[in-house]
Image 1 (cartoon, helix red, strand yellow):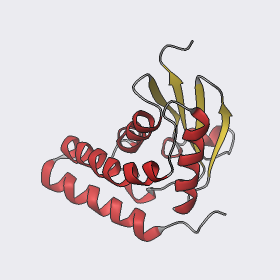
Image 2 (image 1 turned 60 degrees about the horizontal axis):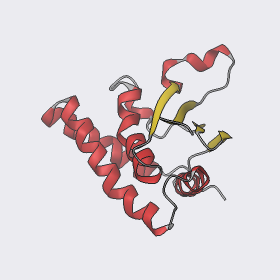
Image 3 (image 1 turned 90 degrees about the vertical axis):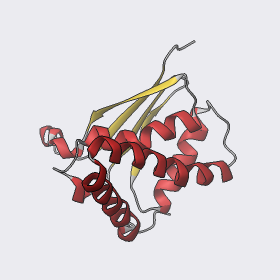
Image 4 (image 1 turned 30 degrees about the horizontal axis):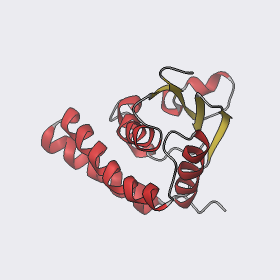
Length: 152
């Protein structure tokens, strides 16, 4: 069951990014956010006893954690070599206009992909709700397409 959107958690992350950006600049703030997400998400995923490089375990772990945080996500495609991962909830709406959405999302997506799937995987953010690209068909979501670099 999906929990309510965790404003306190996402508000704290937003404030942390803003403080780091003011103090150290955007590039350094983004690098530190990557470390923070890795430090937080690593133990959460490790407790789920996932099998690395398993697309279905990726989906399971990410979906469970996102639901705990009150995020609505879908996986319209999961195959052996490709995952389409969509956010229907904007986790960081207060950062819109303050940072490039793809750069910020990479701070946690890079970790999720490498930790759960491995270095043979990459991702691309093909659509972001901050870009207003969703207005074309009125469906608002952020989409990350994760692919195996060298599919078998």
